[in-house]
Image 1 (cartoon, rainbow, N blue to C red):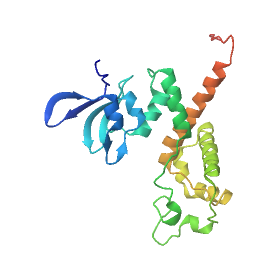
Image 2 (cartoon, helix red, strand yellow):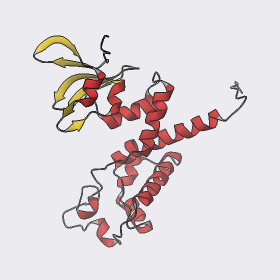
Image 3 (spheres, one colour):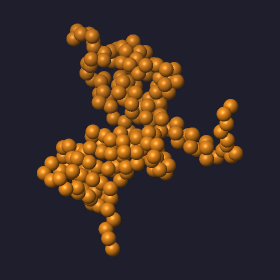
Image 4 (spheres, rainbow, N blue to C red):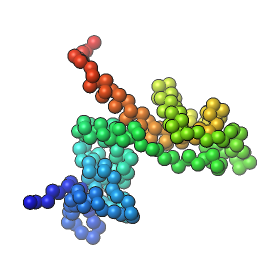
Length: 215
């Protein structure tokens, strides 16, 4: 019996020959002690940039990434790929909606940053508030409410880095870790988009005699 060949493609700087790997080999292959994410089953793996990092192309719409990052590729399949099969898109939408988002700025409470420091003599804005920690569920609840407010009220994402707005958030909840502009405008937005798409799908599944008209 012939071995099933996956569409995963690699190029080498030492050879002009195209090399293909089986899906089982790819799933079991470890680089740096880590396994490849399952999202790679739907992505064409291209040239290796550094150890364990590759260029990538969407198997369905041929969208290209200069570096294939699993989180970005999951978001693409969940909400942005028009040619992705519905069942695949649905599964990745659930993953995106529930995945844990890590922010490089989440340790900001313990150090000064450019976002809150005008000069070296200025104290950290967080030093004036109660640093009582809140639960992860409460953090996510506030994150969800925050991104909805920004989108529905058409508030510029840059406002999240305004010291006066940060001051307001800390007064409302001293233990809340304020997301960076990048996390708010990209990661939290992608999560909310995935949750919204899932809700729309559920509504359509139970809706009968649905018609689309011009008026």
